[in-house]
Image (cartoon, rainbow, N blue to C red; front, top):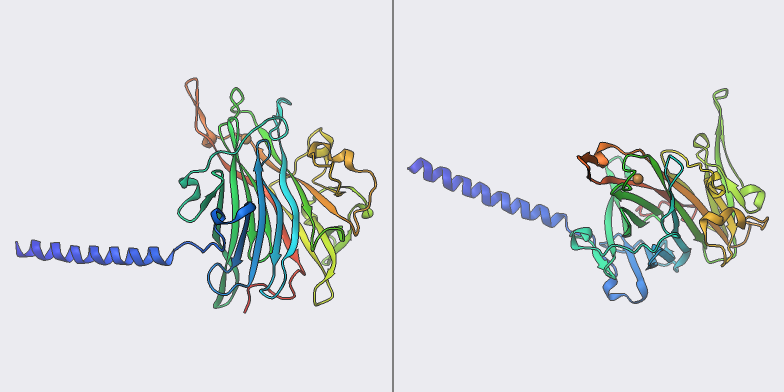
Length: 381
Ligand SMILES: [Cu+2]
């Protein structure tokens, strides 16, 4: 009896200690702080300072919108690279202009934004998780810890980002539109495909191509130039070079992404940093392959055009190319980021006549990364 009593009280004490440790652990993993929870910010603008706790070093101000047939999109983004610096415009507009979904048999060939009137799904508290908040019933705003920003032996810094995301209800499919604004000035544009495969063609392979239209106005509009960056190396020589040349000889056109060249488009402003280098952004695709379809807009990975208010439709981008300069002007970068979907049983299976399951989320997109925007390593002591 005495032994039983001793065992019981011992277990109670250990249990109590575990609860206390658990509580402490939960406290140390509290949510990163919002600078402006959107519920209190008029006009769909959010501001986020980094780091979320402690003295501000960098900050993003982001304006966004959403609409039927368009999903979630960005209508302005400004970056502050130091507390003493003014807000600098980076984006005028960035969005998934369309989602092209051609099936392997050749039909159907859906344009999930411009052929339909799909709306965003109403967000739930489960979408938001315990750190996110819901804007306009449809959009999730989050501030996330995004893992290591840098490491130097024993020194370490974790990075953060401001994330806005929403889910397009594209009939049987769902598309997650996600815009991430990172503390180091990087913008990560992502489209995720998930949900139920196309009824009647559940096991037919197909592509989901996110067609991005990115109107970058670095340091305001009117003085940006587009370049093609490439790494050049062959198996016959130990040396390599990196080149930066005017995009398509300085006029509107298209560009192929080549894996061995680490191809990038750079958008450079005439403004220079303190080391006399032009500030610019690198457009770095995230992909497992490249999309090529019979449609002319899908014969290249990048297009660059001079900004025209009437030119907004990705499937017509090839017709916008008419020899205008893309140097020292207002440029728009168009990019196709593909998801190749060959259905697996993990994406669903036939349970008798019924399809059961959902396609697990796949991500594609592009990163816009600063080059010589700073004079130093950001968020470094
Ligand atoms: Cu699919």
